[in-house]
Image 1 (cartoon, one colour):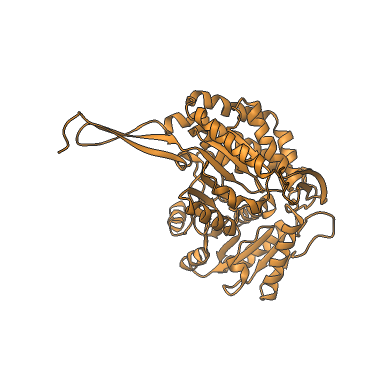
Image 2 (tube, helix red, strand yellow):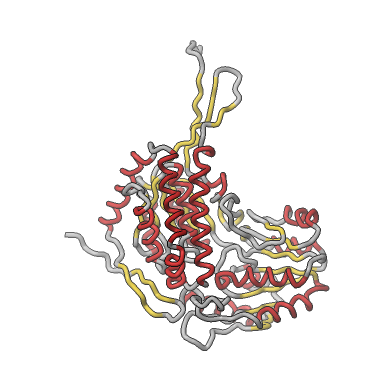
Length: 467
């Protein structure tokens, strides 16, 4: 007789009012093993499907997402609290990524000839098997799409462990794949607690792992995968700099920085977490930031007039408040905000912090919430030094009218991505990923489809004696 593990149910809790919406019972070990077996079996046939057949399914998924974007958007907002406009945008972006790989995979994975002295040689790109995808809650559809679109088009199968606070979004994605005609077992959602993921990595039918999450989770999973000689891609968060040059339109720079930081209530790995401005501009810049903050409307994320949503959970809100309090204790200046809002839900006041020094926790640690941190510099070398004085290296921004100068600065920032006059963004054709403690590997763009394929060399020569 199977003994059910004693563990908490996986729950949807609406962060706008902290009300429980729905619960899911975690899967048993037997159920989980059966799903992985099914994914492994499905790989045997899916890898032999033509790119054309795979593309039909991916295009259908994209079409369904666009047709049902209001429904999908409302579900994301219900489960993790983001603004409804942001949720709908995320659905549309995900559809674009599915279409991108459906259109490009055959070209990207075509045999690549190599120059050789005698005979012929080429690289054949072949799928490797079942990929374990471990994803966070802040972009419940996009995070899935980033790993699923490229890997399914490459011929791999997938098992998804999504964040436990977005179970309905996780299940809905599997339902969409089934509706689009994806064969049974090619894409599989699983409900298990996060503490059980590490043991899953050792299953021999899991061939590689894609994880977006915390630094702690990433190092744990990478260690487990390394012990079994399995490849991993990691995206582990960031503390993106936003360097403002002295030739900017200050109003435009302020609006871009504030909008970027308040995006998804500050719960974005690539939002501008450290805004770095010339010393002579600091007072004016701060004054204008305060003016923009005065226009922010915090409230119901389903209300299209709201522009700052709640955080994803009560725990997330309390963690951000603890970080703000720590900054204050260490003598940073809390210019505005810094408290829980006097209302139901996981709300934190939009907050401005200045006078942050390298002795403070806030200088080094990522704050995942609506917290705007302002730094200043005397010369551009100091700006670059501040930008690079972090263990993270995901994205960054340089804001300035002189594009040549901005690019020169961008080249000196130690990150995987730098955008000029735009916060670190997202597009199907642009690679996403970081360096240093922000992880390794790339998703999206041509680079994303090569992460989990076997680049097999095939060499042909006329038969002859070697010795």
